[in-house]
Structure formats: C-alpha cells, structure tokens
Amino acid sequence: MIVQRAYNWPMGLEEFLAKLPDRDRPVPYHVLAELSAVSDDDARRLSEIWAAWDSSYLRQIFKRLASLAEDNALYEFDSVFQAGLKNKDAGVRAISVTGLSESSDRRLPQRLAQMLVEDPSEEVRVAAAMGLARFALAACEGKLIRRDYDRIRDALMMALNRKDETRDVRRRAIEAFGVFPLDLTEPFILKAYQSGDRALQQSALYAMGKSGNRRWLPEITTSLASESAAVRYEAVTALGLIGEEGDIELLVGALEDDDLQVRASALIALGRMGGAAARRILTREARNKNPAIAEAAQEGLEEFDMGDPLFGDQPGVLGIVPEEPHEGNGRGKL
Image (spheres, rainbow, N blue to C red):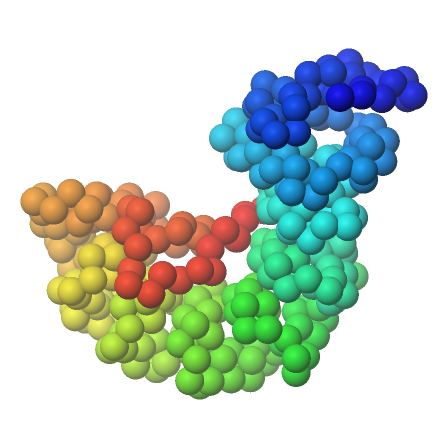
C-alpha cells in the first residue's frame, strides 16, 4: 500500500496512514484511534485521499470509528465525520450523521436540515431526520438561534409534506417534529396516527409522548388496547411522559400485559407519573421473581425519586424486543 506524504501531516494522520493494513483486513481500533481530534483542515485533506478508496472499505472504517467513539468517550472524530457528510457514498454519509450524534457544532443543524430536504438517498434522509431530533428539542427550548429553529421546522415539514417521501423518512420526521408547538404538529401527528399504517402509528404515539401535551390522552388511551404489542409499548411509554398521578388506573392492563416489554415499560411509566399507589406497586414488583420485571420496577423507583421524566430513548426496555419492535430509536440528546 502506498502511503501518501505530499502533505505536512501531523503525527496522528501520518501514523494512521502508515499503519493501515491490507484492504482485505479490518482496520484495528488502535489504528483508527490515530484520527481522534484531528483538525478540520486535516480531515478535509484526508478526505482527498479516501476519495480513491473503495466505498465498502470506507464504510467499514466509518462504522468502526462510530463504534469506537460510542464505546470510549476519550475518542472524538467529529472532524472526520463532518468530512464524511460530503462523501459520494450514501452509506458513509449516513454513518457520519450517526457519528455526530453528540456533536455541538453550531453548523450541524443547518447541514442536517439540508440533507433531509436534498439528499437523494433514503438512508441519509432517515439519518438526518433522526439527527435533527435533539436539535429540534433544543430549538423549542430556546437553546438555538431563531434561524436554526426555522430551518429545522421547515425541513421537517417539507419532509412530511412531500408526496413521494418514503415511510421511514416520514416516521423519523414525525418523531422529531413532535416537540414543536401543537398548532404545527397536530395535523401531522393525527394523519400518521390515523393512517392505518402500524409503523406510522407507532411513530405518532412516540411524537405524542415527546410533545408532553395531554391533548393526546384519548389517542394514547385507545392505543393501550391495541392488538399490536409494539403499539401498546409506545402508548404506555407516551402515557408515562404526559400522564399524571390520576392516570395510573389506565396502566392496570399494561401491568398484566402478555408482552414482557410492555409490562416493563408500564412500571417505568408508573415511576414517571408518581403517587403513593405507584410507589406501592413498584416496591412490590421490585421483588418479582422475574429479573426483567424486578429491574424495570427498580428503574421505575429511580424515576419516581427523580421526580421528573427522562426524555431519552432506549432500544427497548432491558434489551427485550417486542413482537413488532419500534425502530425509532437512536435519537441523541443535546
């Protein structure tokens, strides 16, 4: 393999290029670590070199970079992922969006909004919509400038209004859009909920919970009785986010649900809703012989003690996957 030395590389890039193995072997993580914290200029220079690399090989590198950054907070590859957003390969662009899930770069909301509207790849538009979710929340909390608020709102609405947009992009857009004011979001959430498409219904319920608005209590309550475990799970989770102590009786059925994840989610929802009855149930279930239920009850007690809902997302409760798993996870937090 030829190592290019035309540029005056800093040691990290020099070491990375020198240590790259043959293309038929994965790049070791200790070699990828050489790219941590490289400058924007050096990342752009590196992108000139990788432009000649095979796309599958480059995707492998970016996947491993994302995995390394997720597993070890000491490593930071934001400049590399920023350069990857402009790569010709859609897979690299999508992975780069995911790799920037913790980035605080002020330019990123604008870039993701543009990708959601303009990128020809569905995979990239899905990633962009998911990436915008945390910025949408920050914008609605007044943590971003008005221009970014408008850009994010407009991009999400364009994706939802586009007639030929795919279902998966619509799902991620509606999930991200739920935090905006009800007068903007209600028509879109209702349309998804009433679409007859179970996946869109799940995303609509997710958005209802994110909204924090009790206007959605009737739809959420109805969905608690759905034939779909995945829909019931989203309904229970949403109820935990908008529900109050007086709504605990709505969770009675969910606490006895045949689906283990729905039951676990109901216990966590109890902790978020609070009240003496919730604490009694959680304390009792924390001694359940089923480890998953006992652990969920303990998590519910922790939520109870915190006294405030957590607006994070996990890929299911305790690693238990429902029969129709909700795929709307991976939304980062700001």
